[in-house]
Length: 563
Image (cartoon, rainbow, N blue to C red; front, side):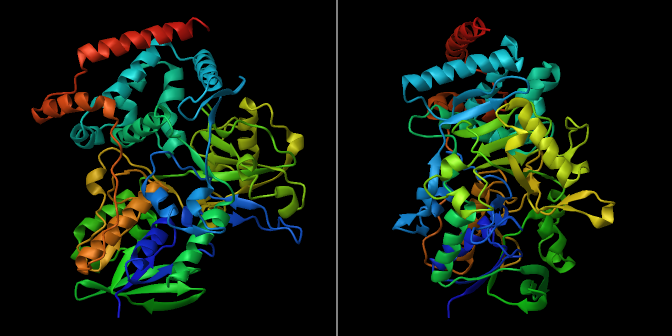
């Protein structure tokens, strides 16, 4: 009989592991704690929002964002069948614009891709001028930030991995000694991108992802941003589960992991509470595709005696932040740009997306959802729960109703097109709950791991010293190096490859991709590799950089002249 793998957790990592295993001849059982599959990537039905025969309004943990540098997840989506002989990958749509929102100013539109027309060039030029004029950034701020980006792009991989892992982003970009606008707009960018305080976020992680996104922007045919053409579970997660079950995966919901039990140096059993009934399950191999804060609570003394390095998971569980979504349902489809809104100076680090424009081929909100009055959905991510808002309260100290009111107020400060009269209702992700034992304080059931400086050595590998236990979650070591759907997918592939080795399977290993290194900077990285091997610090290539700096100064002077 084929080896049986028990996958604990049915989010992107768990479903990826099941996908790769079932296609390689293993028997697979997945245990997911929630009623709805998909983990943080799920969409949900908003309770009590439907008037039959319409469906409940679609809610979600946060809008789905598929950057151009994603490769592992995109490969998987291309292998999931969808109706009409399509693949789930066909449900991704490239955005064309980014809207930068600054309170008290008109929103600024710029490109989310390489220019393809004269109109694109006009939008890019106009957006750049307006951003510089509105942001408060100085000529010197821009020059300094671009120098930091240049250093990242021309540093060798070894320097970024070993040296920049030990430096916080705030320190690397010299934010403490620069203008308030620099600190807020450029220094605080990590809040919106990865829900990380810039003082704590790892430079290697932030820098790598930033370079990837910039490289996508300047590469013809590649976009920085893709979104789904419908509610996540409808156009991705449910078809994925259907495919897995058609291949033989036993996917069980409302099945929460409650404990590991060891015997003879291995995992012997796992206790599962399934729909209120506890039982112990067994398998040949176990993949823990659980969030770091959940896995930390499940570690036992027996497990740590076999693999003491797992103790670091208990440290990593403290490196989490809140990044959770709220949806506003509107009685009209408010016209915003064909892409995301980045509220660059919002106290709670908001980003948003007007969804119906991307759903028009698959969804009729007015006809099929809610009470028939909803025509627009503005999906918003709240990335800073600790900073006081316009109401002088941090999000974590507010009630759900106060959160909705304050997010709407912050959005309206930079998006005057939003009107109170258009508001139908709102839905805050049900991961945000009122903790009855904490005097009404909020708690987040699914926080997001943030890669902090000095933490790489603490992050475990997918293969543990417990011979039949493997880790597939976004806190393990990966090329992606960021808590994202891409990181979860890559981690699952690495766990499966480890099982293939241990089981001596002849199946082809899962494919892995490293992040792309922009080819124009290859000579500079080569030179820096030699310097780093000699223990020398990074040094800009004077001849090339002087030319680039001259072009940069010409551009900036031209732009600033239009202020």
